[in-house]
Amino acid sequence: MINVTEKAKEHVQELRKKDNLSDQHHIRVSVEGGGCSGLMYDLKFDDTINPGDHVFEDNGVKVLVNKKSLLYLAGTTLDFSDGLNGKGFQFINPNATRTCGCGESFSV
Image (spheres, rainbow, N blue to C red):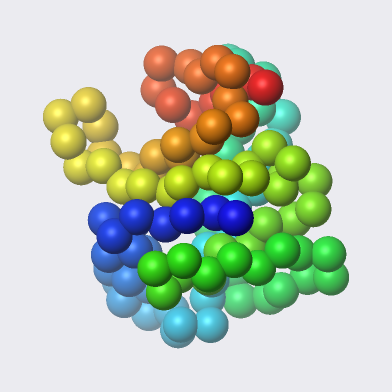
């Protein structure tokens, strides 16, 4: 399960409106190798559900996750911060044993 906070939901809706995307453009979250901690998050809009994708819906937002990435993302919460420490989506991942200072990469 991938959870979506209210702030993340609001920002997803703003981005869809700004980019003129329909509600059929869901959030795709994946994990790729790289970053200073070894693994990096990738977040984008996608209107295609691929075979093998897991589809989660929380707080009115559908999140697509491929099978490989699900191993790293199970139980993760997608949040959005616009505070003094930076603006952007944040991943609160209980599987991460270490994260980098910017929060964009992690290791398990």
